[in-house]
Image 1 (cartoon, rainbow, N blue to C red):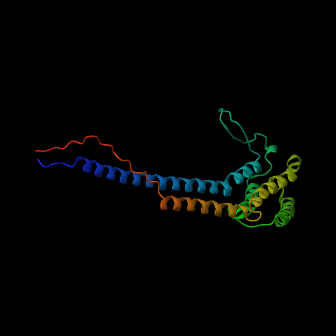
Image 2 (cartoon, rainbow, N blue to C red):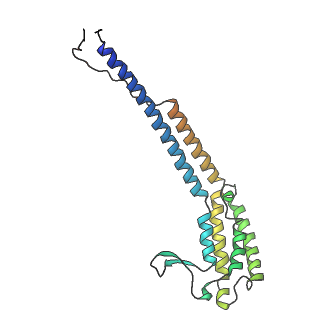
Image 3 (cartoon, helix red, strand yellow):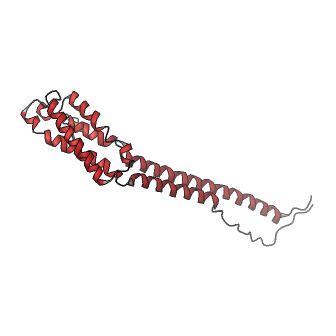
Length: 213
């Protein structure tokens, strides 16, 4: 049997093992970078998502509120007294058609000055006031009590719209999104360029055995 270079064989295995470790570290680094990017994208989506705000306003127009149902579950409660429902389906639809033009992700991603936002809200407030006064009975405000909610309806709507516009003051939301993407991309590129490969460790072999035939 030929002599076997035990130390050389072990060193060869060690090099293969280190190579595999290096690839594993690179893979973990890439996955970490992608996970960070996904987290940032989710945060961005949360910042500009308007579905929850629109949903709450629609329930408000319907007179619905969060409470405990008869089955013991928590959810939106439909008032049994019609007097507590300020708008009928036509009125709700008419209001949602208007506010969905303002509460929108494109609004959050725009660039507005604070003064311009005040001008937009003032114009919209005047138009909403005129619109509801001209159509209040058709929209379901057909009782004295319902008409007392007229001002509250407009103020709540304008305040909700304002919260969306304020995200766009000076284009802050867009700036934050761009900055977040730049940082994430830089981290991923940096991690790929300089993977953390573990240093090779030397085996300390005492009295290696030599096999001979």
